[in-house]
Length: 413
Ligand SMILES: Cc1cc2nc3c(=O)[nH]c(=O)nc-3n(C[C@H](O)[C@H](O)[C@H](O)COP(=O)(O)OP(=O)(O)OC[C@H]3O[C@@H](n4cnc5c(N)ncnc54)[C@H](O)[C@@H]3O)c2cc1C
Image 1 (tube, rainbow, N blue to C red):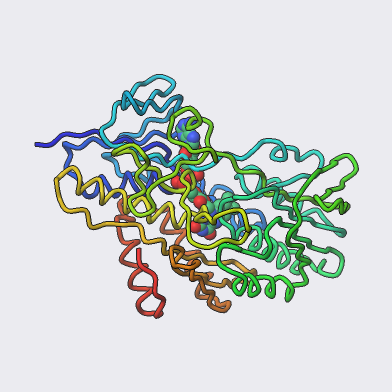
Image 2 (tube, rainbow, N blue to C red):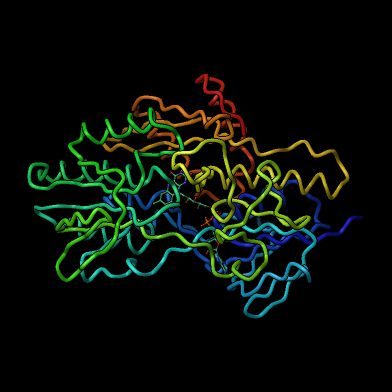
């Protein structure tokens, strides 16, 4: 009987899917260990609804142990060191050896603008931040709301745009549409630049229809909380009543000295197998860096966006590859770069963006017009994600494929 140790680092989207998929497919002689610092999982996509009081905070969390197969060993500890040469992981109290390693540690958020709520700087990128923002949005009566993206890359490239539209909807319901302006500033040339200018135009049209003022190509330079002003690189200074910042994303500290990263600080991987430069060591989800065809800044190649949908499908791919390797089977699984996103637009409507991010000469991404069905799809996904692991199994791939086929949407997973 073959015996191996597979260790998964990080119990977020990618880590949960990988651990469950491996456990569902592999015999019990293969040990699967998941290491995660938090016992409670928080579903980040729902922070947008939490922020506008469409979700209660406790409804978008679940104990990690409920989401993960009971025969996966979970170690709730901070990972301190990844020792690739020694094939060992050091946590606060344990040293764990591996034969196969999946790194799914996500991103960190720079603290600078994160917890400064006393000056009216808010965010919806953390669970606590989304709750504080909800309380502020309930109080504001008039003035300027500014949403500013601090730097690129940031996870879920649709989220700031969804946030602006959900806040607009919320303000309208409060009868304050004519008293509050919503302004969105980003260094990007248009929304979702990786998806191309046409799709970007569709999203900026949605913003315009809701009266949201959109300022592309504006790099945040400085915030003076005591004066309630924000300044951009062009030296344009604006005054705000409520400021929402999408904080700078950085690679997780623990990978810094692991030898896995390149000069960007993220982990480069083979785009089809998700394997790092080290054999049997994989990196999936937000922590990795995958170059894709096309350019939107003259000097910078494009990168695959950081999004749960990619973490999810990469986890499925890597699980299948490891399974094949252990049992000497032909490797058939490959991450193909297809992805999708339900873009919330308020009023229980969403758009549906989908496509092939590996297409050449640039990603081929389209958006379906707003509909209730896409919003409902997002709600159902949230319910499915937070259901106990026994209900979840691997229906995801089958459902996506069936849905895509019946709606004539050419996505594969
Ligand atoms: C507001 C918002 C809305 C979003 N909406 C969408 C959406 O609609 N669609 C979509 O596809 N994506 C969406 N995303 C993005 C999505 O949540 C992320 O891309 C996804 O979670 C990435 O998965 P991951 O497994 O790579 O990382 P994560 O899910 O972030 O998991 C990383 C895990 O590693 C753990 N970890 C890190 N370091 C350590 C350590 N040293 N020791 C122990 N544990 C550690 C963390 O605690 C965390 O649980 C959204 C994100 C936000 C914030």
